Length: 552
Image 1 (cartoon, rainbow, N blue to C red):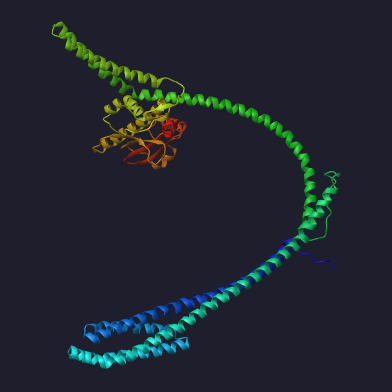
Image 2: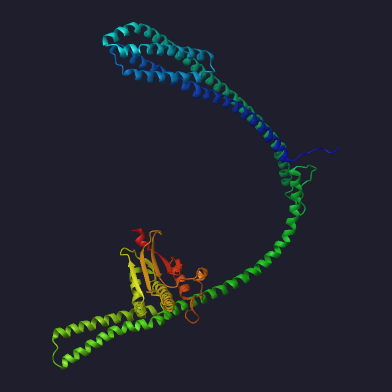
């Protein structure tokens, strides 16, 4: 006959089930105790505490009523009768509240009913003398009071005695209820501790016994077998397979299968090792090729940046020429005027000095433009240093401002005075600004063309705002906003991709924003479009503040 066996999990589950049953039993005991305690607390809170309040209120109200009656009887203060009636109603309400709360307690209920009857008799007797007092003079009031005060004092003392008797019975019942609750809590505490301790000990013993017989002893047997097999090879070693149905028998079978798979894997590992050596050699060669491609890509990127600079200069050439032509015309006009005055011998030294200052001022202006153009256009390595963003904006407008004026595009600058210094390459940042100004100019000109076609009045403008960012810590925020045609919503995600452009064929390379994006990322900043519509586009730049400013 085959022996019945169960798995280790089932055996452990039986032990846990026994523990849970014991725990459930203990919880039932606790819940019974809690319900009894809740009942006692409910009794105290819903009956005893309100009864105490009503009792005190009735006693205080009755004393006030008696005091008011005495003033009415002795001094004839008829106006106090209404106040006495109000106090009587408060006492009546308090006694009725006591009656409702204590209707289930026979001794207190009978006493309260007698108390209500006595109070009603007292109130009725006191009310009989109202007509007498109201129709008689002060001396007659005293005579009437003398006749009735003894009777009312008797009734008053009787009611006070009944109230005090109720207070005494009520206090004893309350103390008895509290003592009963405390005794039950102590008893329940001992019972709960005993049940919990018993369940804990039985559960621990059951778990220890099940664990030892189903897990510890079989594992110790496996360990001893493994130790005795130290001299055997991996291929020859096998654990004895038992006829048990539990996890230990499955473990032995799985272990033997694993050893067989390990033997087969050794051969595969050797083959993989040889293949890996070949792959490593190929990978090293690939890395060399990738490094070479990366170097070429870096050179290409530098060339693209330089090409972008030259393209910007090409687009701004007309404006720069006009910018240089203005001081040249001033110099020429001044020189011609001076020559005429010299010929006529009508030129003083003061006039000549003034003309020379004008010529010097305009040559300095030309020198600044040419020097800045030379610095901007040359191909130089990236050099990070302190950068004044406001100055870079002014330099950008020095290059592009005249072209914008020629196109009747107004530029509104809002540059904060307290902008901290940034850390970057001013030449590259200026290239980004020029790209954004050029894009804004093209969008405004396209919008102006549409408005002329539709015969709509239009004034193109570009707003440039720079300040320390309030939303992003240690960042300078620059906004370029125009009222041009805007960017189609379905093309915003591609706007920074290389060679992507929204302009007509032949009017854009698609590299301006891509190069700008790469430059800003190298500066650990960000560039994004925060607003675009038919009314224009707003592009935001965030450039980090240099560390020395942050440390201050």
